[in-house]
Each structure stands twice: as C-alpha cells, then as structure tokens.
Amino acid sequence: MPTHDGSWPQGTPCWVDTQVDDTARAREFYGELFGWDVQDSPPEAGGYLLALLDGRPAAGIGPKPDGMDMPSVWTTYFAADSADAIAEKVTAAGGVVFMPPFDVLDVGRMFVGADPAGAPFGVWEAKAHTGAGIYNEPNAYCWNELHTLQYKQSQEFYAAVFGWNYTEIGDGTNFVYSTFSLTQGGDPVGGMNDSAIGPGGEDMSYWLTWFQVDGTDAALDKGVALGATVMMGAQDSPFGRMGILRGPQGEVFGVIDTATTVGEPPSGT
Image (cartoon, rainbow, N blue to C red; front, top):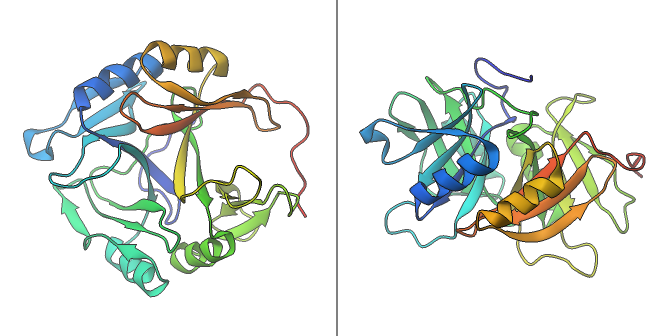
C-alpha cells in the first residue's frame, strides 16, 4: 500500500480537495463511491471535511468561499517549502495569485492561483497537515494532469515556478502529452496534455484529478447510481482502463484501473 509520512518534496502534487455547495451531500457521495471515512474538522476550520482511507488522509471536502461565484471543482495542490516564495515565482512567471498566502490554523500555509492559461491550482506549505498519507491505491488519488490550451507556455511557467522537467510521450501531432518530474530523469509525478490538439479541443485549461479504482466500469456505474454523470465512458489505454465522471454538484474527476492495461505505452517523439 503506497503511503507517505512527512512533507512532500516541493513541486509534487501533495493534496486534492473539492469545493462544493453542499458538503453533506458530497460526504455521502464520496463516502459511498470510494469508501472514505469523511470526518469533521474543528469548528474553526469553517466546515472543511477530511476524508480518510485506511486511517490516512486521502482528500478534502470543503464549502465554497463565501461570496465567491465559482463552479464545484477538484483542486490539485503542489507542495512548497515556502508558499510565499512560490507566490512570488507565480507572479513573476505570468500567473495569478488570487489572494496572498495565508495560514490555515496550525496545519499549513497556502494560496490558490492560476497559470497564464487560466488553470487554477493550489500551493500547500505543510505544517501539522503534511498532505496525502495514501496514494496510488484503489480509492486514493493517483495522477494529476493539466489540460491546457497553452502547452509550451504552460511547460515554461511550471518549470519557472517548480523547476519541473518534462518527458514528451505523445506523437507530437495527434497526441501531445508530457510527464513532469522534479529532477532530470526522475520519476514522473504528473502529466500535461495539449487540449488544443484534435477536433474535440477543449475550451478551457484545468487540472484533472484521477482516482485509482478496482474496476473502472463498476466505478462509473456506481457513480451514476449515486447521482454522477459520465463525461467519458470507460476506455482502454496502456496506462489503465479509464473514465471521467461529473459529480452530483458538477465537479469533474477521473477514475482509472491501472491493473487493466491494453497496448504498449507511447515512446514519445
């Protein structure tokens, strides 16, 4: 079982949470879908819920900020040694910091920003809460992927902010995709997809969270029974059988069975 203790290295996707209108409804949905033990936080945490898997922190569920008109979303957070230092890098590289870094009780320091293409993301400086304690395990998050309309510019932005190194694995024409790592030749910790490629090109840039499951078809069916809708039906790939759901409150996420693979992984350009 892949578990993690302590702070994550800077630039690693270290936490995911969803902001919704009705946290009680989200607690029921994700508790049923992934078997999470969703616990209340102290009153001063503003209604934030902590989802545990096998007793370890797996994800968060929180209410939307008061007075902010925003869709329900899953947010990817990247580890930072200093949230303030990363905020300065985000601004210098052409991104946006929505509000200055702030302390979250004694658990960490954070901010939410967006890259130059408009994809929002969070930054987390760990204190008492170090981030996910379980990952790459059924019902835990396993991959975080940027879908961007500004592929090269986004690569340059995140390299400037987090020092990421990229490995191109697409064909360079119909499938433009790279994995990113913290060091040259290091293990990939996430991916980046050129959303402007192909006839079905998306109209916005965003980070997509993937949760590992034991049986993608069953997970999609269960999600629908619980009130979700299928955005992408089950598809086979060299990385696993995958699908995409829109939760009952509009939040989008992927599910993938990494044990069911078809074909050879692309070798890149």
